[in-house]
Length: 398
Ligand code: LMR
View 1 (cartoon, rainbow, N blue to C red):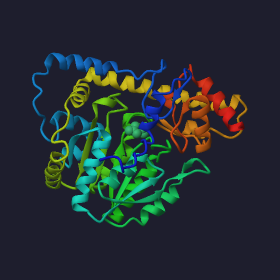
View 2: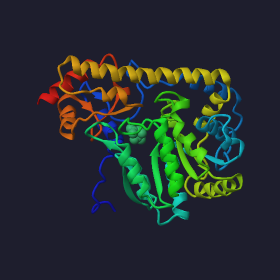
View 3: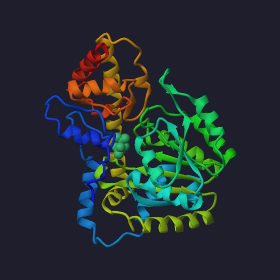
View 4: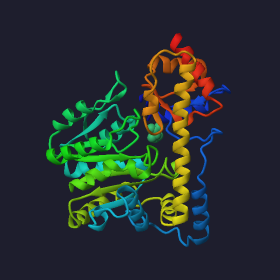
């Protein structure tokens, strides 16, 4: 069957992890996949997660199927986190949430659902965007278009370009936005800019689809949700794909959610009915464990506070690594202003390193960076930062 078939290319992000694992060089450093590492270079299980798992081990009484959209307690906790506990969206019952297998699963469920009712829509993605966005929405059957976002000259947001592209998006098309910690650039909108984009979405009638994979990695759980809150205030239909891979460190539990916000509770009930039929034919109902862990933590005041503290430790360590990288390059006399690295938010920096340099770093120094120059700052530690700065300084002189 496969003799005449060409092998598929490796995934541009997860394929790097495979290559990294099989690299035998002791000095190797993985700055590719967006996974948090602590100062020891490992990806820990959060203490609040361990505590919740202990509770579950004692209390969990069945492994029977969950409902198609997952556990209702999980959905309620997801909504509080997305909109704030006292949000009008929640009291008006305007949101329908389903537990999806990770942020990617949520995006795909949303894509399949939108395709049913909006078959001729295009999906507008930021330039640049997470490589897998393209695959997910093309596979769901959509044609893609790009809106302006990042200015490589200034290494910052090109808000004028963004607004002028979005002003030309036809009603009914879908606009995929990164709610915070833009992947790959680390360049975000501020609160005022979100207000303008939300107002534009309402005026033009496109359907916003917010990918919210890094809540709490920017500034805080509250301020990172300001884009979601602005869209909620418009009263229009929109989608949110959220993930607990990063902020709860639940990567392999595939714990995410798709939330559809509608203008009314009646609309929301219809949305939920179609969410269920969409999920039923893909994976029937979600895996339980990660959602139970998240619901246990968020509904328990002590564990909730512990989670926020552990999240702050991850966020602060990444910020410290941004400063260390900028200082490390400056102290090696590398020319150029790298201050944009500290202005970016979340796990990533669009470092400005060319693909030639990315290749040189991998071949000569066993340092793995995603093509396009995206660096995962969370892969830097006090033990490897000097090695990485030396290597980048050398690469830029080659
Ligand atoms: C990333 O961008 O590195 C992460 O979101 C992991 C992934 O699935 O690509």
